[in-house]
Length: 225
Image (cartoon, rainbow, N blue to C red; front, side, top):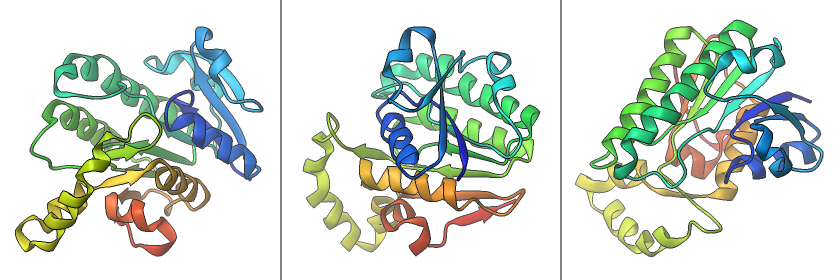
């Protein structure tokens, strides 16, 4: 049984992840603002704090714990560059600081697939978050989806035939696979696998879209550091 602390545990991915971890017997705690406590899944412990301020929750973390960082701007688009810098970047910087201070066991960060021809501001912020993790010397798993299909997020499914065609053509195959679509079920499964099977101490594991689709147990994610 792992002790898992989730930043962003009341959101699209976080609620499903928290509930599934709890079903699998793990201890689960979620960082939440006071006004969002009611959105924390039943059976999951709510920790009131501010994801943008490490000092507000570092005392709640403990050595040997896994921190899953899911905080981010909902429905990201090129028009939300200022919000990425205001929320997404400070929140991962705070998470890295809290993780290092508490000497946690494992940090899991949901980043974004890159390089890509669009969403440059979003990618810049997420890659800065990845760099902060590496520079801090943390044991970490960085998961890089492009778009996660699920309830309320199905519209890109119309692009699946186009993706299939792009994967048949050598010049576009790598990009189509790197920027492919994944389902919410596979995303949660990947995060569960990451919690239950962390990388070696001091290593940073990169999980791209092809590995999310296959699952960590069936693929070989890249390891750096």
